[in-house]
Length: 163
Image (cartoon, rainbow, N blue to C red; front, side, top):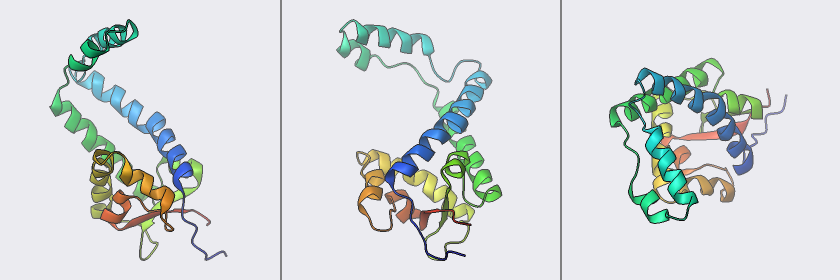
């Protein structure tokens, strides 16, 4: 058995996140949209903005944003966190994208399964990583332990699943 810990780098984590977006976030978003009876996001307005941008009217497209219902935003976020936590529990730290990429989220000190507090902290840590111009994610590319800001906040790491 190989006991060497191999940290997952930026690109494999990016691929796993992209897969999770396709197979988790988009389907959940579609369900939430229909549960909101179409009130979560104004797609007609969004389409108008795209058309305005395509015809060169960028200022109008950027200043006149589609209406969104924050309640449904919060519901979507809670559902995404809950589903991610379920996957982390059932598949020992791996969402479908991470499972496909053969990586998993673990406690940074013990390399064991993460707890719910770490899962929630990590999820909220994504916002912090985003708000500072994605630097929290880019850190993964430059750190020896390949931990992003969200990992540091939650005490987690992403490693290859060599079991």
